[in-house]
Length: 520
Length: 99
Image 1 (cartoon, rainbow over the protein chains, first blue to last red):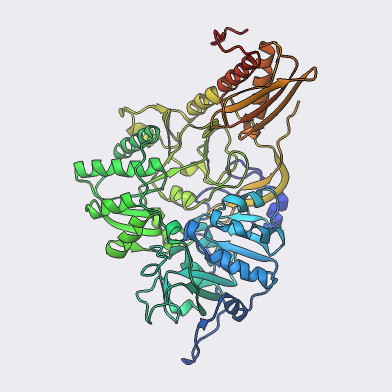
Image 2 (cartoon, rainbow over the protein chains, first blue to last red):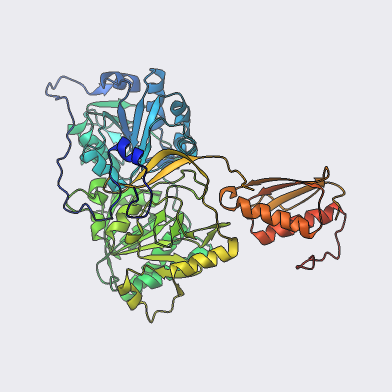
């Protein structure tokens, strides 16, 4: 069946998953549903301790068995030790058929690939995957369909009961013996625990894993003891050097700086750039550069940002320090500067992933965005974006908040260099659709800027602005003139993964990759 | 032109290609490895064969390790490798002189 972004979703996938095809970014507005609930065990005897000796004891007490779904958060990013630590113990216990439902997985988790191959892990549900897990899924090694969900989509899937978590393992930089968890004050600080909150609320069993046990009560807690069954102390939950790197140096790449300048010029010429505007940006070099150049203009014109949202980096915190931002609302910290900021600045606050982006709650922060500045691996002439599957067909990225913020913001800007080596970023058809074009308003490249024709209002207000405006087709044609027209990837027939839209429908599928064959 | 001995041109840097030519067994024997094989395999092969044809090379073993080079780069690397196999290193007819 063909969905609203023109992708063929095979009947057998619809049948196997019970899902529907994507019908449009706002098709589920006012959707009525009953929330799921976990089956929990009361702790009313004050003599009972929640402390366990090790991961093994936690697993035994939680009743780990074949076929369970377990969950993890990714606030420790490439420095995470929790996933590998828990999976290694599950593997040693000979448990099979596990589904991992993580907020994201990265290269740090390459060691679980042999467990995919031997059937310990049969399902992966994540924002995305990189490294060897991506290769394992793309080459058909995972038994079940991998499911890629946006950050908001994951909360929706858990709260609506689409996925039920048997045991949640939550790495906590500090924790007390009753399970009150905080993101800061330990050896492996990660700033916030936003993604893990839904796991704590909806999993049957919740295990807090910490390397810094602190006296009771550890308050104010990011995640409360009322959700926690067991507390396990380990030597290290992560590698601090990889959890948060120092602030990335502002880019010196003239191409990125030029795109950032185009972006800033575009932003300030829209009607949304006014006192109290709201803004989110990604962590790419051009996005960060555009935050810096926008900050200068805000200062000159005395315009303040009312809300800075999202994954937070040092340049946003610097604007907060300068008084140019009223409130920073945070679900993830990408560098040390952001972590230090949330520790000390009362106007830098932690929110849950549900508050951030869940399309099925009664209104998320993303809905209040004026601007979001995003990147993309590919953008097609219908403005559809691909941020998960590489142009070579291999799964190598994550949805993150891309579709959530694009759907929410009044002005969604995607920055992408026209060419990455020989690969054109602007193309006729993206390899895989992850963000629908109807939610993408502007594409900025180093060769020109294209405004989505459905935004005639933006086209109108840019009429007298001196920026190199082009149609999206013109941009594609310039790219193809330089590198040639790329052939579509030769995929196999088997579907190995689905790209879930925010609302749980299928926006695209990912097929097994096969070796390239010359066709003479 | 005849490929008289093994010769190489190009690097393994991103957006370049390393082309090796060796004396052949009576025909063109072409092997291509590329970081963009799925999207551009067909075009890379056509460009290499066309360039060899223009140079009138009909008997060679040609190995291409491509890192996303544009067609102009591929052509230049093939030409250079073939000339080097003939020890021609000066007064090269660059710039489309070779028809």
